Amino acid sequence: MNITYLTLLLLSLASFRLTRLLVFDRIFEFIREPFFDEVREEHEGEVEIYYVPKKTGIKKFIGELLSCYWCTGVWSAAFIVSFHYICPEFSRPLILILAVAGFASLLELCVQLFIEK
Image (cartoon, rainbow, N blue to C red; front, side):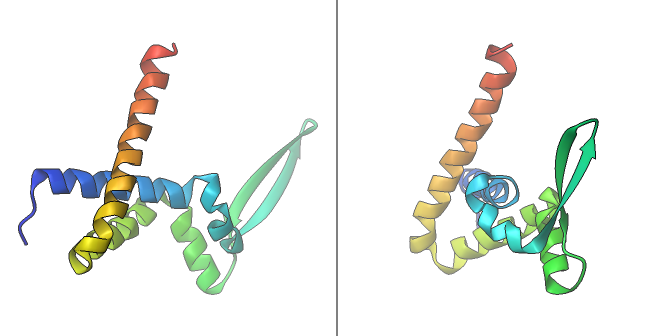
């Protein structure tokens, strides 16, 4: 398996962005929803909402996986790398889009940290 630094960078950024999509982004909330229970707590008139993984079975396993950024990152990386090697022609556009989006999100973080202070 021969991999260039550019390919490694693209796969890494694509994996980063896919992980963020699955764990945090609203657009994939419908995927996370079946694996979590909503818990509401009221403190001094303010309601806080928490999402906790389901209690049993496969939904608990997937809920715990999706609540752990590091765990989901491993599976996202495995998917991205496997897809890259199994279907290189089909995976290239998806990996490139995710990598560019991942890089853009890192740039946005830099803007928020350094420019908007």
